[in-house]
Image (cartoon, rainbow, N blue to C red; front, side, top):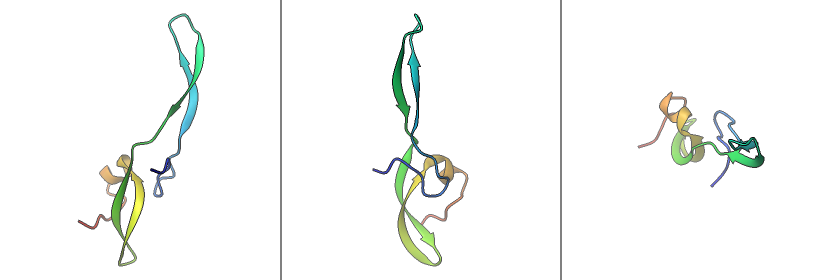
Length: 63
């Protein structure tokens, strides 16, 4: 599964997980990316789209 959205461009973010004692360790935040069928220029195409783009109707889904 791809780690980026082809519509909004969301990608994996990196940062630190910080414990109560303030010890830091690296971690990642991945976008919720779904592989869906989308209508693009009258043709059906499979794309990796984040759920935020799906909820805000930024793509025309082919159902």
